[in-house]
Length: 229
Image (cartoon, rainbow, N blue to C red; front, side, top):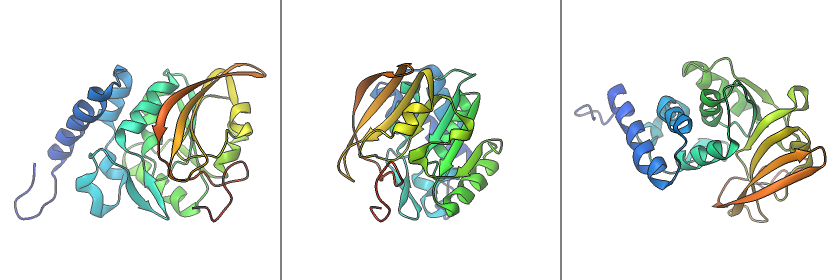
């Protein structure tokens, strides 16, 4: 719903667009986990994008959040969350927290969410956005996401919102037995394959290809070199 002469959506309009996003972009494309769909309806994505992009918040596309980073398209966030098979008691590491949106969605599905972001300005942005949206209990740390966050390990699930050239060893090692890591991997800045890596035992992992994706690069010691982004 548009307010005449202003071009800005009302809160009722945002709620309607969010429901349409879930119905037309997410459920219609095969995501059918009810908890994931409910989480996508619950989280106000327009609070995690720039002011100029609020009316585009529920379109099926990534949007810039500054510093060369983006907020992932809603379908991809939902698809990755479904692949993690989260429960209400899951402990999750969100790598590349950005503006905080994915962490908010994860917190609707899990018991504990820890976010890591390498850029201090984005850490501050994520904390501000999460607090404003009612998710202020989520911890966001300034750290090299390619190295995970050892202090809080092990994790039942790790979701990575940036593409790596190969699977970071530290992320695999910080998984609990039975835990899932969902991460884009590929040799190109513009194209990766999304993988789900499940820890079977201390030294055994199972992998599943979830399809083509395109993410910004994961910069860090076990990712791409600084300057790649």
